[in-house]
Structures are given as structure tokens and as C-alpha cells.
Length: 101
Image (cartoon, rainbow, N blue to C red; front, side):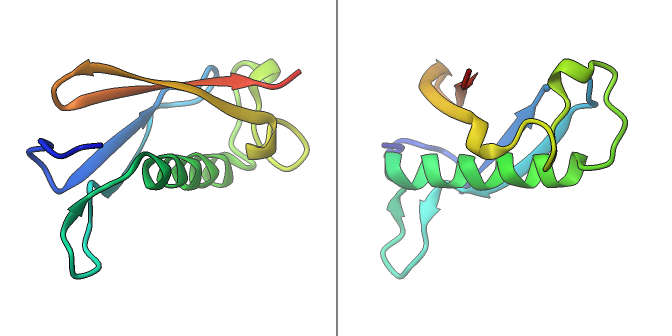
């Protein structure tokens, strides 16, 4: 998916209502001896892991907008679905995540 990716890692910024900006990183290439570009499946898996890390990090953190509070008794990873990935620029992708009803 990212054959022409000029970097070896991706940065993820989560701007979630009621919380401060959260950032995470993950590898853009599969380093398992092949150095092959990351696949869509691996990207989605990595995004899910980083979103889970965000929710875990925000557990117990005060949320300015209680409708968007995350954590074990609020919005969990299982309540979210990845709708699409939008290429914003050559090195920037934006995931579109939706809260399940």
C-alpha cells in the first residue's frame, strides 16, 4: 500500500472531543527480513492497536465532553469501526472512524 512511502514510521494524531491531542507511532514497513511495504491489513491492525492505546491512556483522565468519554465503562474500541482511509497528501493519511450505535 505504501510502496512510495518516504519514511519508515507513521505518526498518528488522535484529536478526540474532550481530550488533549494524543500521538502514537508505528512502522511503515514490515521489517521481518523483507523490508516490504505495509499492507492495508497491517495498517488497519496497527491503527486499531494505537486507538486501543489511546483509550487505555485516557482511562481515568477527565473528559471535557462526557458524551465522548472513553474507557471500560464508556466508549471502547469495540464501539468503533474504521470507515475509510483518505489520502490527504503524499505522506499523510486520515482514518475516518465512526461510533457504532
